Figure 1: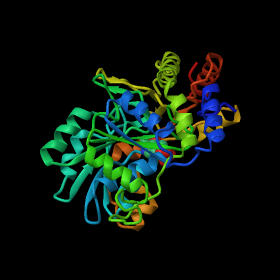
Figure 2: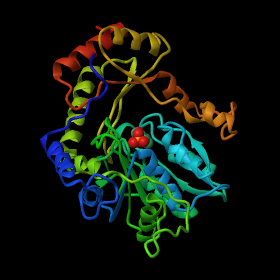
Figure 3: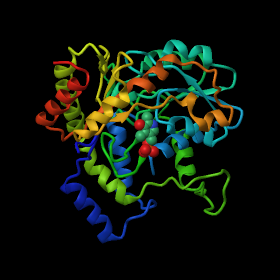
Length: 372
Ligand SMILES: *Cc1c(COP(=O)(O)O)cnc(C)c1O
């Protein structure tokens, strides 16, 4: 089976982990070790001052929302087309995620549809750089400024991508990364909150560690969490950060090869790269332009040939978890995300994919679509 993704992990990762184990520095509370090094590597890459490493991208988003003191009664604007973790971050603190439709071309949150969703309860927008393509950050930042709300970038799928030459994750008030095994770099599981705001960073550090206060350890002013990344994970992350640029370039080359082979297939919509963007093509997605053959038929045929694919996100306003809570309703209509959810899927996109495999995948896909 050609997998949709497989991580690349090298000798240095191994050596760093062995080093932690030999010294017994394995937890998430070690001082001046891989955790701080990893935080500063990630910050340096995205141009932020402070990094707070966490257990996952999901907990990074949750920590970001909690650090802004967002709570019950507040609203947080998120795209309907994203990993559900983006919206869960709001729900965990009792706030309401408010869903916005996507742009048809980039699949990212449509900036023209945000303002109509802003109310006096809106505290933050979480744009997501979907599948590696940056969201339209200038429009989003401008709107946030006008309405005095925070922007938390969910850069889980786009570490290394740039928007007008600025690294994603470094543009909003807060950026969040994931280091899950299939992301641009990995620590197995892991995440990070980055910001230039010292108060937000300190609050995030405090809440990450059960809100143990620094003055009197067992005195707690806030409801905290244990979202601490272990030193073992950070040790992997320090070595992985050296590979980020290479991984991004590999993904970009794979995307170019797919593009060369598929751009003349009228039945497929392919990923784009806007003039102001550097797309890192985390996953190479395609969207069917017509109903037949159906996505399921195509995916089944590809699977029979040993090609793993995955459906695009199912839009969040249609998720039972949110319908049951009354966060969304059956009548809500966000047509672009719905179409993407029905007709989109992604092809194998692991950085180690070979030319022969790409040829094989594209030939198989064309055969399913009756293209010679
Ligand atoms: C992967 C991902 C997350 C969640 O990260 P985990 O590390 O898996 O918890 C959040 N948002 C987006 C857009 C993602 O792709």
